[in-house]
Image (cartoon, rainbow, N blue to C red; front, side, top):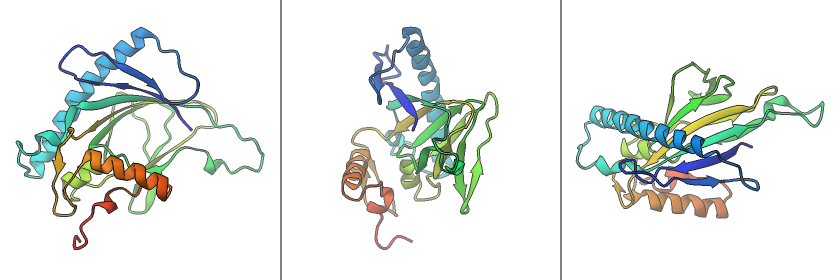
Length: 224
């Protein structure tokens, strides 16, 4: 499993008071200068995310005023993942089972990933898994569940997973951004809902069925 921490970008338009939140273990020492770098990095990713979303909204002929709150920079955060190298405890252990992150979709509108040269990211397309080979000085953009709903399924939330490297640890930095608080997502495919509604349903499903059901919980019965 990855060892992550994240920096919440509370409001990119004013001086930030970043919240550094270790999410596993006894806590990770965070160098102040590194948090400032992440803060600045997050501001640039917020700008890129807005530009990408505006372009996709235009392509979908969405009302620019109505969909403005469907992506809110104030919800964005940067998460840094460290995947320790994989080490087998048994000579008979299957190396293909060494997954740092299992198959999932992101709940976000957009996820913008900066992965190192180690790689390991795989995406599912047409029932086949494809390795996303690292390319220097590039970013990987994943569309999340919220973008799928906003687009009436014209865009699909991509299923992906991360494979751990046997010899090297992997570091990735990902920016996630979501709809604004109270922003109602309206679609011909899904019942109207807010991201808070979606998040609450995901947490309930994790407790009751053990996994994230996602958008299917909000899909209209007559939606094709």
